[in-house]
Image (cartoon, rainbow, N blue to C red; front, side, top):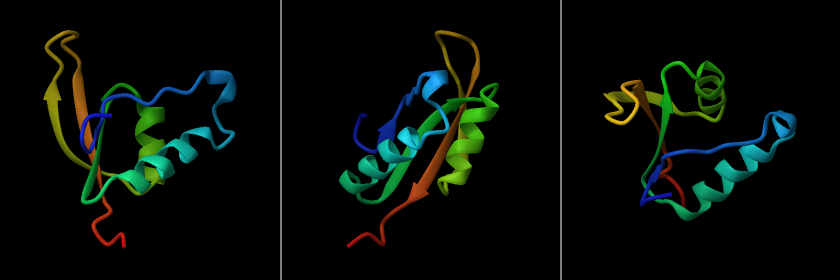
Length: 82
């Protein structure tokens, strides 16, 4: 995690669907104020759906210079946090 940006959140396929990713998101939300940003490859539909389920919305895109794949930026506004 770098400031409010999570560049990657990876859960082993055999551990997916058990709530670990949601727990990691909840922990990160507890440490961030403002906008919580994640980047996910456009071709990673499963991750996009996970982030949408957590309340993230698509806010941008950029080309990853190392892979030449499109990266989507998704954000969650948590500024109402007390």
